[in-house]
Length: 367
Picture 1: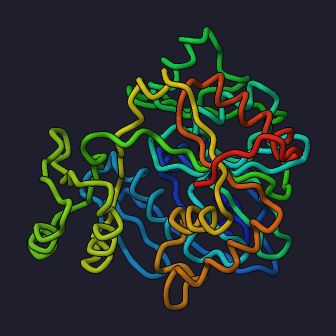
Picture 2: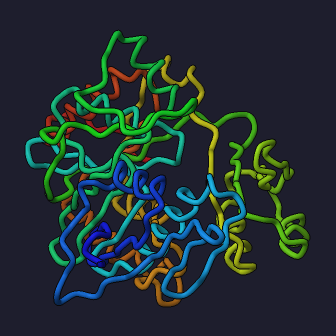
């Protein structure tokens, strides 16, 4: 019977969804169709069960999560399964970054959520780059290469508005999901890249606003002890409740996100979604500025973007232990900081990096 259930491989981890819940199956199929594999014979298989009857719940290898709102079951299941799977990956260092290739050279673009990784990635693909991922740079600990992570792209409405300013169309794609705030796009197969060694690391830097960026963290519930703890966190602003589901939404400053994650983990409260304020449209009206970065600064940027979290099997005592392997990945990598600006100019700057790296006649300032 198990062979009717979809099976997915995320690097060295293989999971199977044992469910007949169609919305959950449709979500995973839309997002991870390129990850589907046959059931392995000689490799461990991690089973996740999603049930809608007699009560909506997700059953993982270690927990059973009851979901009060049936319509949230797919999103909650996806979030839990992905976080647990990423934390178990040993074969790759995973960083929150876009990854692309051009002429078999790898490009890593590091930026916070909402700072333009997907927008810039789509613009680069229009200019001949191949996409490995718009959200994850997966560095193989065995080969040193960037590995593809061909999940669909979640594109904000702001990206469409910026493309319209240039009278650009998205690269060839199909829409796999559509909502008021975002579209999920699956790019055509010929636009997806293959494994390659990283040659360039670009850290996107948006203008620092007069006030800190706000983030909105949606929780499954908010126990009194957690709420009491959060009120003592510097950067915690307020809690509101969504009209339709009455789910708690924390409004916090970006600087305290990791503390929020730690408290939620301590009190075993699921985080359903994190939304960060996007780059102001005016950022794309200024001239982008490129600066050279030291390899240590580049490695620190990747470390801050590490996706595995404190529960990652790669973290034994403290994430700082990952700084050395990250630095080794950058041995032959040129590191830069790019101030967000006019999209066409950013694309031109990145496209011309090989020429810039090959000459020392006009050295850039170092940050």
